[in-house]
Length: 185
Image (cartoon, rainbow, N blue to C red; front, side, top):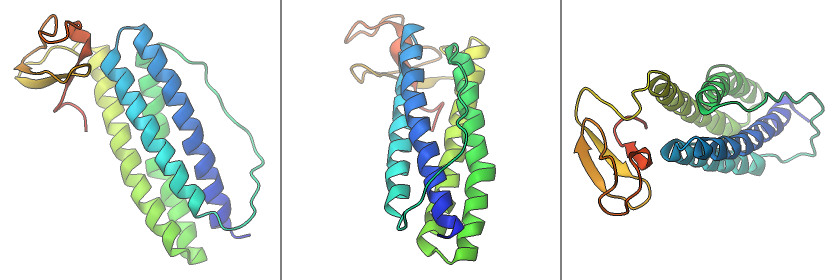
């Protein structure tokens, strides 16, 4: 077994755990009445599921992962966003670049391609979590100095303004269901 196969399994395990962590973070965000942040966590969880599937397809040898699993207690959404950003940063700047280099040593062209692409996606996830976390911490999640395009994540209503309407005129959901479209990638 070469090291790239072991790294594929490690990455598969990490992406699978991230998916489950993010779905839990989404439930917690909903409890805090932060629906659109919950949806960002769910979207990222689905991205992580796809990453895990792609990694799994490249595992061609019987491999075993023996090691430790680190779990941090879930906290409030602002803390969960920071924890998620740190995990994505590690994957983007350390884990996937190291795995990509090892895949080059092992001559695994498909793993080189996948690790290289995943590090870019994880960097985008990190950026999104940092932006949302900053807005939540600064209590500016629903306020902007410039006009933004806001979308109700329930019915799709679009509104342009410095803040979303107090209530959606279509489905009557509160402003917390509005997501700024040009805030996150």
